[in-house]
Image (cartoon, rainbow, N blue to C red; front, side):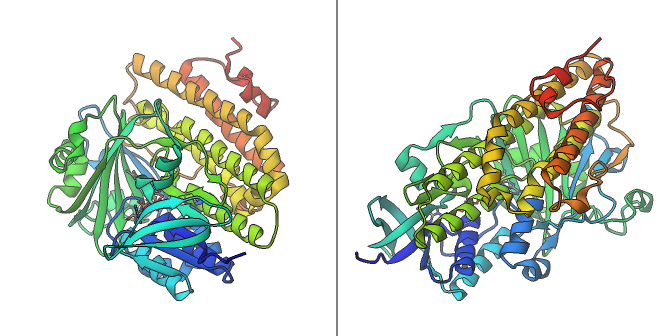
Length: 518
Ligand SMILES: Cc1cc2nc3c(=O)[nH]c(=O)nc-3n(C[C@H](O)[C@H](O)[C@H](O)COP(=O)(O)OP(=O)(O)OC[C@H]3O[C@@H](n4cnc5c(N)ncnc54)[C@H](O)[C@@H]3O)c2cc1C
């Protein structure tokens, strides 16, 4: 049998493709990898704030700890600020959810341009072929080899490969060719962003010392700042070198398309007093926008092909899950290619991996669908946030840190439970929405938006144990989070919560636990 030119050709050298090239070379240096990237250089991109699962991948599997601390910024968690209805509250008077110190599990604020440059150069040093300025034109699927055709310096070239992975982002070469895209019709958000210089330093000497002391002088600038409003949120993410990424994501029922131009975004941001105070004198360095953010995919893997990153699916950037999906799919691609190369029949494993990624996408959507209506209320968001972050740690981060997503037996168990997990999350989604309707009808939406402060990870007292919890312990922490959210929602709805001690997971799935007994 003739040997293909490569074992793996990666289409696109952005975040997903660059990380995969590195992971393949580190894990299987015996396999030949080619990465084809259309651009000749790297630029600013959104996708700068990382969360715990993805950061664990960078640190534990890709050996990037020192590189990240030396070239990017440590992230001080998420920090939420709440405004009044007129949007004219000074930041110091806003209610705030955020940390008093750097979180136990590290995460980073990434300059994507710098990172992608390092990933491409680093993978080349590790022995991958990285070709920049090469636009992929087509993939012809074949057995035993696929053929990838690309344009290099205006000449057309072809290479053969065993595996091909699409990491072309929203260009989504394979999704188009194979008709994989699933439009998201229930969660319709748009986004616009820019990189700014000369944004006010929230930790600076001219900031009110009493307000800085409220968070025990931990760095607010290093957090991802969220200005929260009904139907949308504004982010500020610090990048190394004094640049700040600023943007909005809005439910299209609340934010119009006029925000999708640079002038529109500027006007939109400046119509919020606290935001204007920070960025009013800033220098605008670039601008970008998308009219629709979310979409799904029918499939993640096929016969020696895969789609990863935004070439596959995207839900919502609010909790930065994009890079978590890249992590899991890259682990899967690396694992499948290695096993196949060693002669293993991976058909059953691949099917599980596909189903697990679909499950994770389905479990992600209830966090966002219609939930933007809650975003402008400290009272409602503090319930939702405590629930979401505890569930994230107990359900997802814990198992990733132990590589349970690669364990066939564990995956089988997870997948048998998957529809129940989605169902339970859906029920909470509806309960949160009911609370929003009630609080709004009572005229109380903004009533706690001034002067309050709560610790962002206050309900995650088990954070130190993450990565070591067995299934029963993890489920116990999830149930605790469920019970706390239930009690606070019942209180808001004026219903008697009663004792939650005897409630099990099944009671949340079938809805009994969330139905008032009086
Ligand atoms: C508004 C918004 C905010 C976000 N915020 C966050 C966040 O804070 N944290 C987070 O983790 N994620 C965030 N994300 C998600 C994050 O941006 C994505 O997960 C990530 O950028 C996807 O990386 P990728 O490699 O799939 O795509 P990209 O980074 O777009 O890379 C695709 C690459 O493919 C190349 N390419 C395209 N077509 C071809 C071709 N024909 N031939 C060769 N090369 C090609 C492109 O040049 C590019 O380099 C956000 C997303 C949005 C929309």
